[in-house]
Length: 330
Image (cartoon, rainbow, N blue to C red):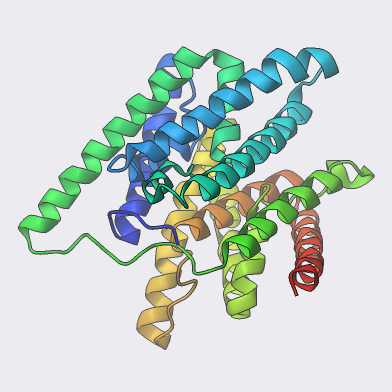
C-alpha cells in the first residue's frame, strides 16, 4: 500500500504547486521540470528521499539505454521515442522490484528504495534526452524543494490551529502481482493500439489510466462513471471557457487540465459526501484528478468518440489479460 506523510488534500496541493512552479520555471528558463506532475509527486517523498534516489536512478539508466544505444540504432524520435522510454523504464522498474523483493528477505529496510510511480522515470528520462541531465535535474529538484517547503509551511499553519495533517495511507489495497500485472497490461494495450491504423484518432488518457479504471471498476463500478463525468466537465471548462479567454496550448494546456481536474475532483467529493453520504474512489484520491485531466486532454486532441473508444478498448484488453493471469495463478 502506498502512503504519504500528509493527507490527500495536502498531497493534491503539492501536485498543484508542482504544476504551477513547473510552468513558471519553463516560462522563465525554457526548461521543463521532468513533466507537469513530477515535482509535486517527488515532493511527497522528500521525508523518505531514498524513493527519489531510486526513481532518478531508473531515469538515468533509461536515458542511457535509450539515448546512447536504442535511439541511434533504431532512429527513434517523437512518440516512438517516448513509447520506447516507457517500455525501458517499466522493464527496469520490474527488474529493480524483483531484486528488492529478493534482497528484502534478508534486509527488510531496503523497501525504502522502491521507485515512485510507473511513468515518472520515463517522463524524467525523456526530458533528460531533450535538455540534458544536469539542466533537467536542477529544475526538477529545485521545483520539488520549493513545493515541499510550501507544503511544510501549510502543515505548520494547520498544526498551529490544531488540524492534524498525518492521515491514513493514500494508496490501494491490491495484491502486488495483480497490481503490477494490471499496469503492465495497460501499457501493453496502449502500445498495441498505437501500432494499428487507429493510432491517429483514439486516445487512452495515457499509458496507465486504463489500469486504474479497471482496478476501481473491480471494486466500485459507479466511480468509473463519475470519473468519466469529471473528465467531461474538465474538458468543457478548459476548452470552452479557458482556451477561449486566453492563449493556452501545449504544456500550458496540460497544466490547465490538471488544475481544473483537481478542482472538479474536490467539487465532486464535496457534493457526493455532503448530499448523498457517498465517498468516491477510496484509496485513489491522488490518481483520480490525474486521470480526469489526462482523459480530458486526450478528448481535446482526439475528440470524445476517439477517447471513449480508446479508453474502453484498453480497459477490455486489461480485463481479458487479468482473467488469463488469474487462471495461470490458480
